[in-house]
Structures are given as C-alpha cells and as structure tokens.
Length: 465
Picture 1 (spheres, rainbow, N blue to C red):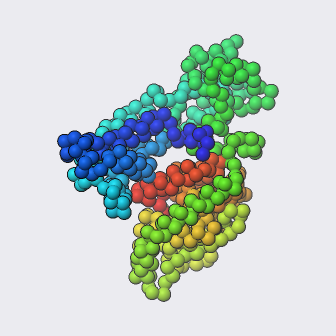
Picture 2: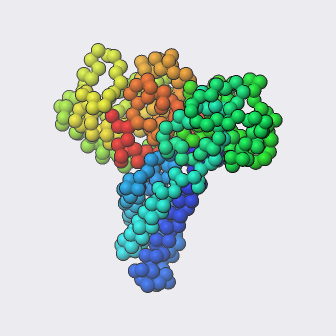
Picture 3: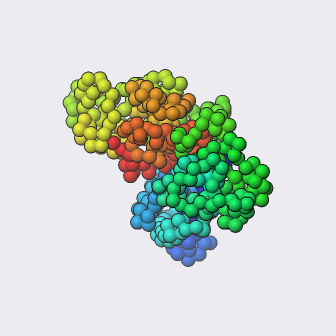
C-alpha cells in the first residue's frame, strides 16, 4: 500500500514505540537466557541458536499487540487500559508460540526462559506505555498547522471533538481568506500586507490547510507556491481531514475531488491478492472454527427446539448493487419480523434470544459468512452489507452512499474498527465516511491490519448489538 495511505495510521510516536517494543521482545530471550543459565554461550548450548528464536518471539508478540489495537494512533488509551491490553497481547503471543513450538520443536525455548522473558517484556513495555500515554498528547509529536480560511469549511477542523483525532496536529493560526464569513470566536489573523508564507514562518507552521469557502478567483496561487517552495506543506482540507480522522467527510466532498484525488485504484493484481487473502483467511478460520460452529448449532437447538432453524438467511446488497443471501447463525426469535418489514436492531433488542445475545456479543453469529466469502459473494474486509430496504432509502438521502457498492461487502471492515454498531440513518452516514476511506485506500496491508485488529473488536465486544 502506498505510504500516502497509511500516514493517518503510522505516526512518528507509534513508529518509535513499535521499534522500542520490538527491541524489548527480541532482547527478552537473551536477557532470560543470561538470567537462567548465566551466559549467552551456555544458553545457546542448551537451546540452540538464540537469534531465530528471539526474532520469532518479537514477530509473534508484535502481531499480538497489533491485534490488541495497541498501535492505533486515534484510539483513546488510558494507562490502566493499556496494562490490560499488554497483558492480553503477551498472553495471546505465548499461546501462539506454544502452538508453534509444538509444531516446530526445533524452535522451542525452555519454560524457565519463557517465564523470565514474559516478566521482562511486561515490565519494560508498561514503562514504555506509561511514557507514551503521558507524551503523545503533548506538542512534541504534533504537526503545527495553519488554516487558510475562517468560514464554515475551516470550522470543520476546530469542530473535531475527539481528542484522539486532534492528537496529530496543533492549529497555530487561522488566516481569513477572501470570500469567507468568519465563523467561531477563535482569533483570526488578517493578512494586512503580510504574505501567507510570512505568517506561516512567523507561527512556525509545518503545513497550510486550504479551507476556503469559495476558491473561485480567490485562491492566492502565487503565495501558496512561495510557501510550498519554502518547504511548507500545502494540503487540501479534505485530504487533511482524511489523514487526521481516517474518514472522508461526505458533507464536504465533491465529485471533482473524488475524481482527481489519489486512490480508488483497482487492478487485476489487487483483485487476485485480495481474493487470495479471502480464501486463505476463511479456509484457516473454517478449519479451526468448525467445532465451535457445531456447538453453536447445538445451543440454538437446545434453546429453541430441534425443529428450529440454525441459520438465518437475509437478502443484503452486494457489489454492483446485486442482492445475495447473507448467512448468519440465528440470534433472534423466528417471528422477529412477522409483518415482513425491515427493522433496525436496537440496543437490548427484545427479539434477541439468550443464546443469540451471546452470539452477537462474541460475533460468533457471523461465522457462517465464511461460506459467503468462499462463494465470492463477500470479502473478508469491506463495507458491511445492508438490507435492500435500508439501501433504497439511504441512497436517496445520503450523498455517495451508492459508491460503497463498488467493492464486495465484508465480514469485517474499517468502519467496524472505527465506529460502533450502526442502527440509524445518522449512523449509516458516519460509517459511510469510514467505508469511503477504506475503498479509496484499500490494499493488502490495510486489509491485514483490519483483520488483525478485528480480534480486539471481538474480545472487547465493540459495537455488538
């Protein structure tokens, strides 16, 4: 995936922290070897070459931490929550390593070394996390941003409410542009003979965000070119918001921006790679989850009777607006929609059965969708498919809603990581903005990251309803 499309996720503090934590995980085997056996040489004689084992521990540990959401820049992370996630991440890494050691005995490290390495890594990583929590919201790592514009479009920056979404930048100046009606009570700078470059240099701005309400005939091309040549980045408002919030604002976007902005690339190679990922992930998931599926089917039968259906089929809109039957374990009563009218699921929905409530919270009700993926109707990652009744209304009322159907719907997706369960038109608009971001920036790396971080969604029950 192009570096451009991961800038909103891979930031300097996260990169530094990841490098430090990888070093901690790698060194943990060496430190444990010295602690248990007295020297590296003695340890190597007993367990074999240490470097490959240390590298394996570092890689598996890093993947576990990604799955726990520990490298999400826009996530609200308090230290006590980081402690829990580091503990769970290390535990998952130990379980994965135990399986690998059983399959490949030559990679085995002794229990004593594993125990010491676990404690060493835990203590040092909690220290790193404590430092991160106390410094990431400081100005050390933030880009200093000057906003050129003081009207309604510029207000979309100051209106960003989530502290985590403001973590990557600090507005040092708002400069009034021609044609703007000043919105808000924050200080606005008038040029008064100064050039945009002069103001940016004076305020120490790293970048200038163009957020004018009306560019026609008002865009100071010469001054912005001078700023760019002076080493100051010049960025469009929509690109800035995309980078900082991980979504595309449908209330600000125009067809022209969608046409000319980078992204939205499709190729036969990308399609092949995505399909290969779908088959590999779903094949592996089916291989390990079939006993769970049998237990789920048994639980549904025990609660609702032997004649009760286990699977629930429902028409959803897929790629190219083509409908298909999505498969799920039935989590609601059989008479949940007696009149045939589609109803949004609500919080504490009375139609959900006791077994269904567990299935929804654990996301086990989605497991049969592996068959939809293997049949080519869905992908592992993509926008969640909606019912035709809802899609019809949403396409009439929500700009660019139809564009989410240019790709296959997914079992999980970017919107599922970034937003809670959607059960209204307002929720659908918010999730659409994340879906458009995914469609614009889709790549193998982004797909793998979403698949890994879905583990966090399942374990913490995010958005389940």
